[in-house]
Length: 297
Image (cartoon, rainbow, N blue to C red; front, side, top):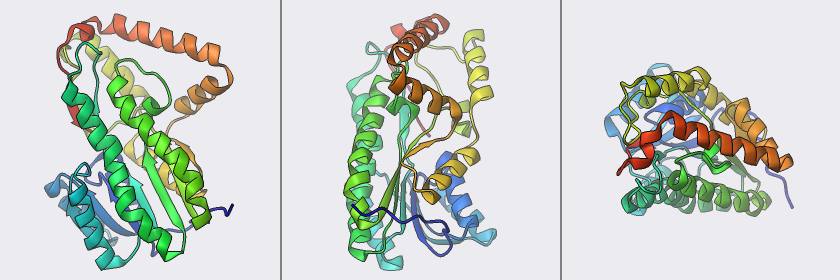
């Protein structure tokens, strides 16, 4: 089986990024542009996407395409793919970064929460793969596919059942494609972020919890103290592409818990039981909530 070639230098390469208007997507787009990539960007937030494109261009970066689309809409993704291919030809790097998150217990989650998470977080990347990867294969010059999963695509985090359903799905798709695409010289990276301090974390709501409560403030402060910045996450992603790494962690804590899960399963079970018990003690009302709040990464 052929090994994918390493893309040690992004200079002049066509890079497609979803979720580029904010958070990890924006930071990755800005860093890739700084390293010479020719950017092709999409996000469902058209005004903010235009702001990002303008900022990159102002700093001397190249944005060949910036068009709004909801990745859960296959027709919209195909339209973007047609426009991008007509403008620049096949991509060298495709990055599935767009995503949403909904937390809640089984009692509080409603069917539309599960459905929307699967539509955006799992079918969204699949739509992008369907539209962008075959032209990469046909071009015959290799490349790289980046799929952003989550720590919740590795471990059993409290209140993440619906979110994990979508992110474990991304992990499964990536696990197959890392081997299927290798003979075409296309590498695959599965990114598993832990806490990332994007601006949207300041507005997040967990159903049934008063954000002004001391309990919530304590947990939020703990999150902020441990979270990495979007820029640090972007550095990890581009390092994964450059080194052709499959597993990409944005923080060492996720790397450690993944190692424990694989090599010390008994310790992993104890840790997850403790995490779940601690979370439910900290925010006991979440189990009685009837709805969850959805927010973009």
